[in-house]
Length: 453
Image (cartoon, rainbow, N blue to C red; front, side):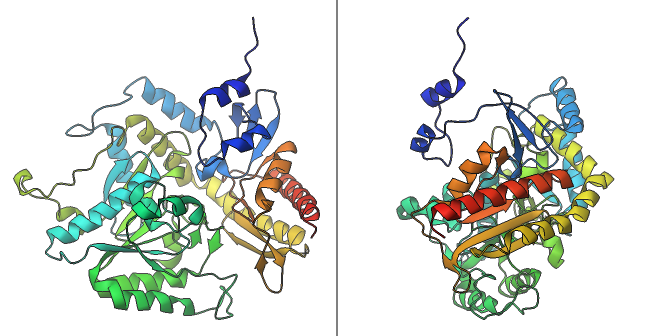
């Protein structure tokens, strides 16, 4: 029997996301056959340590036995049912459980099947809320510069990463941009650990100009992921909550990447003890097993849509796989594991070790500008000059070169420009931490030498 060339078949038929397919001439797709824990195994039996959680969604390790069991059981009972006028036990249980763990006041849950869609839903909910409560001048949105909220049109509009948005700017919505905190290159020469968020002044200015016409502001709480894992103080969130209340603007918290203990707490908003008006969750919700997302919101917003159908106030937004039973069962299994506390306790206990290890290995490299961390997430920003904080030569794809070298040595890193980061499953252990940091350092040093630094 002729042996199948899986890489060739892939390239014959597939167009991979977030990829320049020409790169695949030098680095063909790695075909993964099975996985366990943080390990991925390709068709040639080579192991890769997955320390980016397969695009940040694999929360509790690949092929987690408890989640797998829940999925198999549900598949034999009910795989899908129309979610308009029909429901099922797993989704009801999930909504109830989420109401117990989300920030105070979030009691209603509208499900979709991916993070970008949940952002679109939250924006539409906010806009429609104000249209139906007599505040029709509130039609605009604000968002932080360098943010990322997904790749559908409204979500892309709210984002501000040129890599994703530049080509589409002629068709994007006009979103008011607030200059985001940049603690590494703070214009006020402050430190994130003890500043008063002086940078919030730009937000105040934008609200003063546009607050009365704005329905919602979108924010990635504490961590701007695609911007390079930029971390800012919880005080910024507190100030944002206060100014939103002052101007009657909804706060939409994009917890798609930060939720479910990624930052050390259940949700990043918990660090600031604030509750958003709408919160989007996905990724870790099902542990990476099934596509699922949700917009969590308040009874006040929900009630603005509650009336006779003929009044036209219903939220007419749906997805075929909204609230599907398979995803709900996986999410319930995830929440059950988190509720036991063993995994989260271990993750929080090991987080300081991971960060100290990375600092010890990387801060003595002259081209490392900063090591930043929150929870198990750690990011290393490389610069041309540590004193001036000048960026590396953008024409040389530093992060990509490190990524390629690390793959050869069995570590999956997914760089963000000149930032190398770790965002592993919560189950990672010390041995794996030691190994991935060692490999990342070796590959970074090799690449810096190639760059002549």
